[in-house]
Image (cartoon, rainbow, N blue to C red; front, side, top):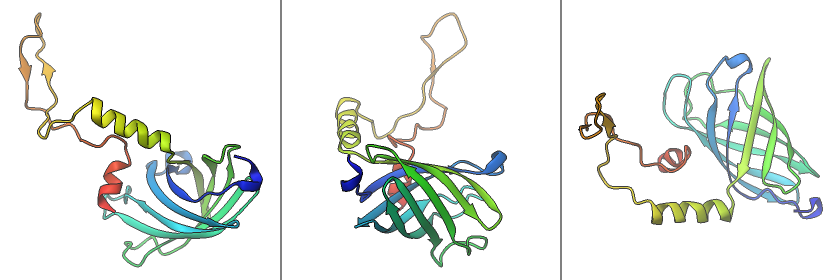
Length: 173
C-alpha cells in the first residue's frame, strides 16, 4: 500500500505490554476510521490486571505518512484507575497492515503492536471453521500414563471454542 493512499480504516487486533513485565500483556480489538489522516474509533479489551469487566475506550488522533499518534480514553463504565487518557505513538508498516510503537500514561509507558484484520485472515477463519468442525461439547482428552493409549480421561476442562485470542473479546463486545 503506497503511503499516499494509506488508510488505517478497518478492524485491528493487537496487544500492549508493560515495562519490565510490571503488568500482563493485554490483547485488544480496535475499529478505526481514517478520514484524510484524521483517525477516530473504538477499542475493546479485557481488564487484565484485576480480571474486572471488559473495558471500552474511544480513540482520536492522526496519521501522517507512516506515523500514527492517537489518544485512548476509557469510557465512564471503566473501574477506578482508568480515568487518565493513554497516548499511543507508532510507525505503520510499508503495507499498512501493522503498527508498532509505544504508549504512555503519566510517568508510565510500554510498547504496543497492532495488526489489520485482512480478508485473508477472514478467509482462513472460514476455511478453518469448515474444515475443522468444533463439536458443541468438547473435552480435552488425555491418555492415562500407561503403556497403552487405550484409556482416555474426560475430566479435563472443555477446550475454548474461540479460534483466535480475540474472538472472546468480540463475543463480549
